Length: 140
Length: 140
DNA sequence: CTGCAATTATTCTAATTGCAAGTATTCAAG
DNA sequence: CTTGAATACTTGCAATTAGAATAATTGCAG
Image 1 (tube, each protein chain N blue to C red):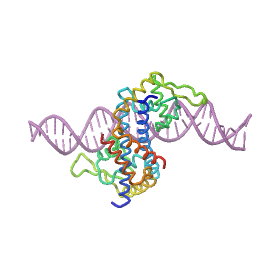
Image 2 (image 1 turned 180 degrees about the vertical axis):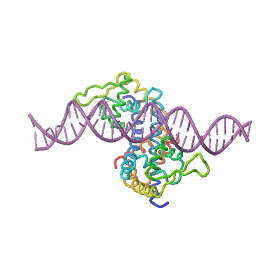
Image 3 (image 1 turned 135 degrees about the horizontal axis):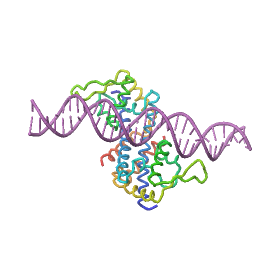
Image 4 (image 1 turned 135 degrees about the vertical axis):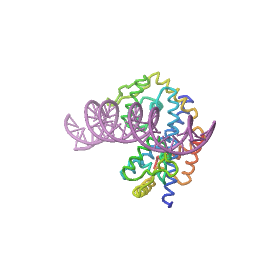
């Protein structure tokens, strides 16, 4: 193995580690979501809905296409967890708001997600270090 | 916002950051792969194929279902980049081996991927710190 | 040696996701 | 005021992915 390949190997391992951690998190979300009868993306959406939010904003936070956010929102609306309200200032947009049932389920979800999270193994300082490193990676 | 929700918020941000970084990496792979006429998962598979490998091992490394690895392997085989050889000891298994064309393309791919990687913004020490933190998260 | 559980790969089906087109609305320039 | 570009959402379609069922093979327990 030459030098270029060795460096690529180190790089690959680290990239794979990040991706693997993301999968770990997603698996964790999926498992907890299942306990509440939700799919992983549904749970992620519910998690992001800390307050009224437009579909575009939700898709940005979830890192998916707007069409996908529409799909997920349809599901959550079908479950009676959210409602589409007209946006007060922009008649194009719709604000997603939690119903009381959605509020309640969201709190149960947050409890489940924070318990035994893959990142809970790290101390608060370590979590801060991790955050700083990842933010710098994003900055480039 | 109560204390539990605040902690969940911190947790959520960090999880989102990890997932966001993973997306950053995937976008990087997708962009570089396109230059070689490959899709992102095809490139990931080619990257993982450092040596002869079973389909199960590939799916494990890629973090996908075996059915998916079969799908990807079909594509790579169709491109003449890999071949399915019978496993010397296990007649159930098949070993994926790179053709000379596959070898050549893989080296070009590794060069492309290591250049301007999202994680290249971090110094070697920082990369090591990041690796240690992520490994600890996996260990839990 | 025999039978049974586990593993490997494949196929098929269903769900998810992204991409492109279409409609309605806003915003800004002239 | 009007026109054109940009934005928000939805819809339809194609491609990707996961999940369950199947078949062949292995390895172990009895």
